[in-house]
Amino acid sequence: MDKIKIESVDAPEAVGPYAQAVKAGGLIFASGQIPLNPADGELVGADVEAQTRRVLANLREVLAAGGVSLSAVVKTTVFLTDLADFAAMNKVYAEFFSAPFPARSTIQVAALPKGARVEIEAVAVAG
Image 1 (cartoon, rainbow, N blue to C red):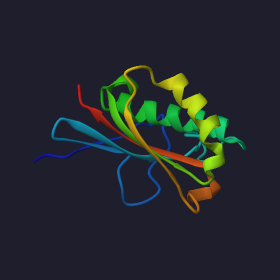
Image 2 (cartoon, helix red, strand yellow):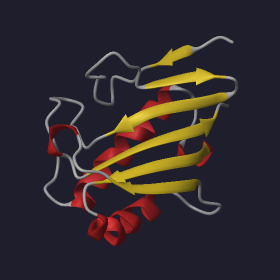
Image 3 (cartoon, rainbow, N blue to C red):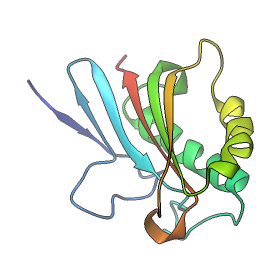
Image 4 (cartoon, helix red, strand yellow):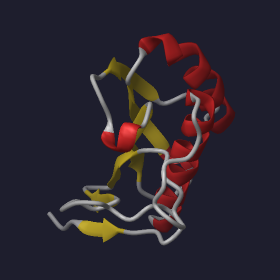
């Protein structure tokens, strides 16, 4: 099976030995995005709403580089450092996705890179 690396200059660069996304077997697997400004790599937003907005904007740009939009997403995984932020994250999430919504898991984690409060990864159907 062929794997095709997907990169967007409009999303933060990968900060390790991984791709922003990979296309394989008719699917796009997008690595987790944290709320980094693509221009300078700095963390954006103090609250989970602002951070979720940036995360989903970054994810949208990575998927666009793969030729699809957020509407092609079939599964997301949301990582929160505090499940008390669930409702606020969910409110912003609903601004970016519409019915039929992707399947989703939400997990509380001890910490995220750079002190982020939220990270989201996705699987999309390739166009």
